[in-house]
Length: 110
Image 1: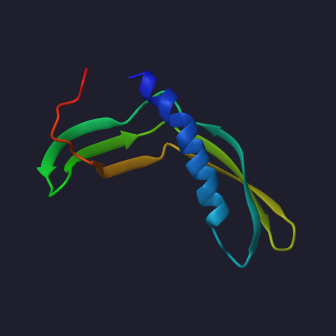
Image 2 (image 1 turned 180 degrees about the horizontal axis):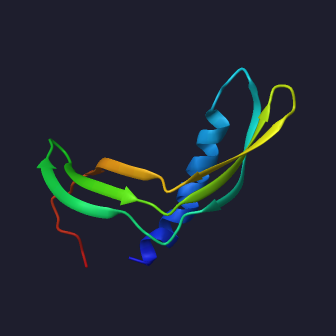
């Protein structure tokens, strides 16, 4: 449980920064990430299903994540006014699909 947030933290921060950079609004000049804390609570894997595809195996995992994440963002308006925004306790629920491919005829060598 405590390992998952540590592994996901840097990836989440990187993706959050990219998402902020991609936001477009005519009234906003710039959005910058000032602070990011992933929190200590990782996602809960509720259930999983597998599917045989033609040349792969798909794994669908139902995920529920009530995070303790906290992000501080600075929004700079078109006229130069900076507005601090705090985002916290983000919640995510949905299905994550992992596709394993290519499949080989030989079993893996452990």
